[in-house]
Length: 330
Image (tube, rainbow, N blue to C red; front, side):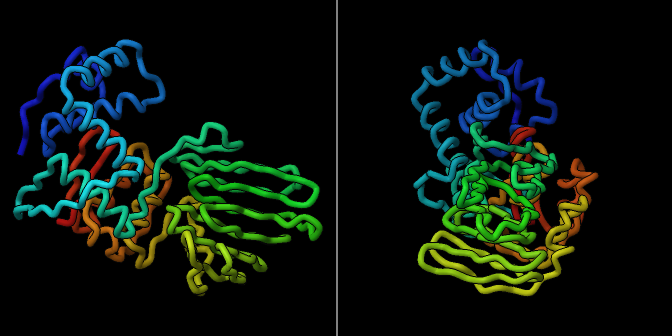
């Protein structure tokens, strides 16, 4: 159901009107304004006039401060708001500020793969969404970085340490038995002497390691595991999952311009897709987040990702802003 457009106070509307495709239905007025201001204030460049207008908007009504704080907490995954169950009629999606937040929390808690989106401005190497980059390290190892990835390098005479802050990277490690090569991601460490492996950091409880050549050793707290070529495992904050045999060509298809998902939880699929498109997709229901999905995506046509999802999966799409799209079960 369409909602008549209303302008934001203090000149906010003029900025929003330049954001083509902005759809403000399905959220209450204050929530729509809070989401819109969040998008404006987190743009690459924020005009001084927008900063002043935003501060005036916050001062105008205490509810504005509360709504904006909710959006910030929900986006970062730090909110402790209770999950609110909502009923949706067959032909209508009703989203209020509380159910908007509840949906995001459910997706995070239910395996949706949502993590705080951080720029990591002090990382040594970064890629933006949709960008691929190959980095040659000082020891002649190389790193293929997927979109929206950030990592830092700290080499010493005894250790070659790479910290993966977010995203996904494929490491081709130059042999050096005197200096182990370690990739730190969340609570775990993956160690190799000379090999090729991939680390996919979706969240602190969902880090997936795939070995293409030789073997690696993985450690989380006091637990350790060895992973051989053609195998994959996932670890979290406190434990390591069992190894599984996989096809590296399929699992690492992003290096060849394809994303291949075979019976993967939809929340994890969406987390991967977010690395390859502008804006954020958010799964709004925990049951949808864990639903297994089989999908192949051509990264050369990343602009068609949303259309591909709509055509192949039983989902409903709500565009809140050009930078935020909510996904519901149909």
